[in-house]
Length: 351
Image (cartoon, rainbow, N blue to C red; front, side, top):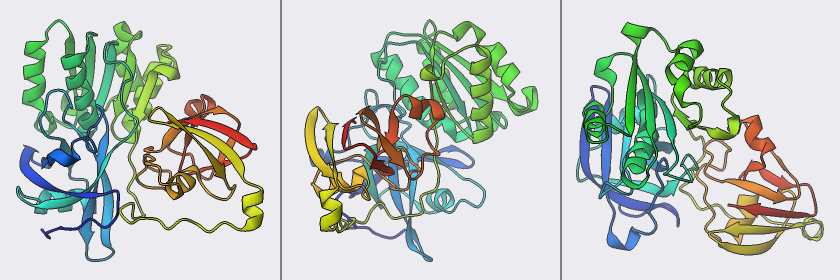
C-alpha cells in the first residue's frame, strides 16, 4: 500500500482507513476516519457513494466508485463495501492491499440514489454487492423514518450474503417494519420477473429502489412493470468503471469571442442559491460551473456515474451521452450536467 499525503486536486482529500472488515470470502468494507474539519464536506445522504483513487502501475491511478453501506444516522464513520469482481482491477486491489492505518485519496460523497422522504414505504432490491447502497437506505429509514420496508436480496448462495448478521439483527429489532426475503440461487434458481412479481405483489404502493448486476435489475424492472408500478416510483443505481481521472483539476476550456457572443444564459439553483451564468454552447454545464468556482457535484465527467444529475425546469438542452439515464428520467427533465449543452437561449436548472 502506498502512503498518500497530498491530494492530486482541490476537490479530493486523503482519508485514513480506520478499519477493514471482512464481510464474506470475497467482500470487505473500508471504514474511514474523517477529521472534524472535513465533517461537513463528507456529510452524506443514504445511498450515496465515494470515489476512491487506486494506484496503478500502468496508468498511475484508476478511479472507482463504491457505495456507502453505512448510515449517516447510525454509524459514526463512513463505510464503503467492495466485492471482488472477476478481472476487476480496483476491487481486487482494494481487497488484497488495503489495511487499517493506510491512507486513500477520496472524493466527497456523491450520487442521487437516495430517498427524498425516509417516512415513505420502501421496496428495496439488491443482488450481490448491490446490497451496499440499499443497506444504507434501509438502516437510515429504520432509524429516522416511519414507513414499512421490504428487502428482496438475491445471492449465489448463503455464503455470499453480505451483512447477513446485521440484517438478521435489524429484523429482530424491527419486526413490525422490516421484512427481508432472500433469493438464493441453489434454492430458487436465477431471479425471474414472474418470480419477483409474485414476491412483491402486496407492496406495489411502495417506492422501489434497486441495485445489482444489469440482468437482475432488468428482471426487477420487468416485474414492477407487470405489477403496474410507475417508473416515477422506481429508482436504480448503476455503476460503470471510470476511464478518466476525476481527481485532477480540469483547466477551464478557452472560449472564443464568437462563442461568447452566442452563449446562452442559465439560472442554476445549487444548495438553495441561484446563480446566473453565461453558457457557451460547446461547454458543458459542469465546465462552466467549475470555471466560476461553484461546488458542482460531479465525479467522472464521462456520463457514467450520475453524480451531476439535475433537472431542467425551463428551456432545452442536448446531451453528448445519456445512457445511464432511463428514457423516463429524461422525459421527466433529468439531465447529466457533465454532458449537457444548451439548445435554447435561456435555461433554468436545479440541482
